[in-house]
Image 1 (spheres, rainbow, N blue to C red):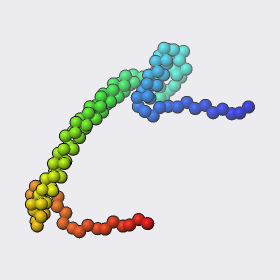
Image 2: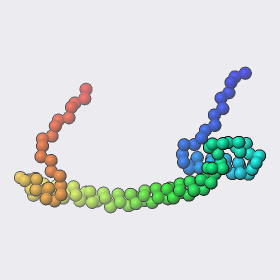
Image 3: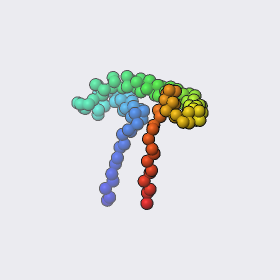
Image 4: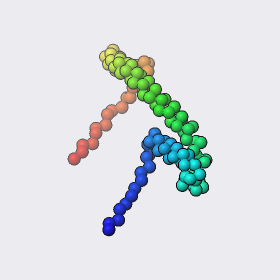
Length: 124
């Protein structure tokens, strides 16, 4: 007879772990004194079961803030792209005007690097 290996996976994803923890805790609570988990000393559901609700609430708040941050970043990026193009066009116009004295672009806030470019090494 071949040996069979049983594996019981524990989710690494916070939401999935909290869902599993809720199921385990609910079953443990339903069984009461008959629960085989009652014998656990440390860690145990007596100490950690009460933390589950708070952890779920914090997770939900964090997910809501994450969605809000993603929405704000998308709105920012929609505005940032044309602003970036305007900055590039401004640089180009100013370089045309100050062709002989490009350091003058520093007065507009541009960082002007006054050094020769180094050649990139060729890869074989």
